[in-house]
Length: 471
Image (cartoon, rainbow, N blue to C red):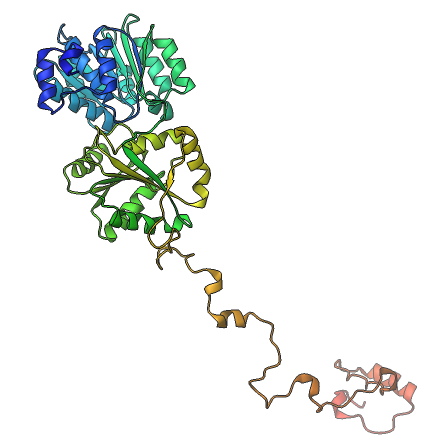
């Protein structure tokens, strides 16, 4: 079977052939005829199976007939991230080069001026992220009443990012009699509920079991002693596993930044892409990775789904993903379009529950990969303040904390218990009474008289220390 057998126009088949494709993938073979028949569609397919072309190609032929109007796009494609939206736009430009179609890309992080101008001139297809689309809609810059074809791409990712309320609002603004196509890698209950609400008698296509991973990808889990030694393990894998291009995924944006910096310091050609970067910086870094300027890209999950970078030989999960579905999308960056790939997930003790959830979802145990020289690598000194274990502290420090005993190094000093310089004290009852303490207060003449009366007549001179007159 070739693309012409699917009912596509000759001009479109020529554009596809020029891109180097001649045989449709399973999802393309099943989806394209249904879309051309104007049926609603639910397509469940693992990433990397060519599902973008399965809706882009028939849309081009459908939109070839009709005219565009200002502020009223004829079709709408919703994508969860800016990168995915830009990638779909590239597909439209490549496959629609033989058709007179206009496209607008509505994404955040760029100026609205050019986007509003394109809408005012009229577009055949609008590719948008939900946030920017809602913003322009609320400003009155766009009307959705003329949109007859809606594509909700990466629906489960939309759910993860909290876009479902926005999608429901957008669907309520579209014409009731429209064609709706929903694509997703998994079908969790909220997505099924969304499909039941907004799709009419859809054709259901499933080219792979939900959450199953590509059989072209060899997958391993790599046990490590602790999270502190993951960098060592990663560097060893990058140096020894014949890595040509690799994407490394982390759960946190801060980890992405720190890991990219560490890899650069170790001599690797690495870049980074995460949600804290502005759109122009993210596109520039992605372009550097695509053109080979760098061959390692550290990513957060903003880049995990849908990005089609050809020739990625390896995927590394520096962190085990919190959501098992994200494992499928991360690993799907390699082994695309029939190529083979390798995927490694670093497993510290605290990752055990997360990897068990992944294995439960994918329906099989990952192969354990033993690092050369043993699984438990040691962290290099200087990378962590806690790297030296307590038992490795100098012995003199431990000795200093022991109770002091008889000092054998100084024999000239006798222990306290054998010193005989002090005589035995007599029992308290045999001791002589203590002398009266000296009066510190000067006595008055009246006191002298009283004392003399008690002690007897005083016939001598008055002592000078009494400080009183004899008169």
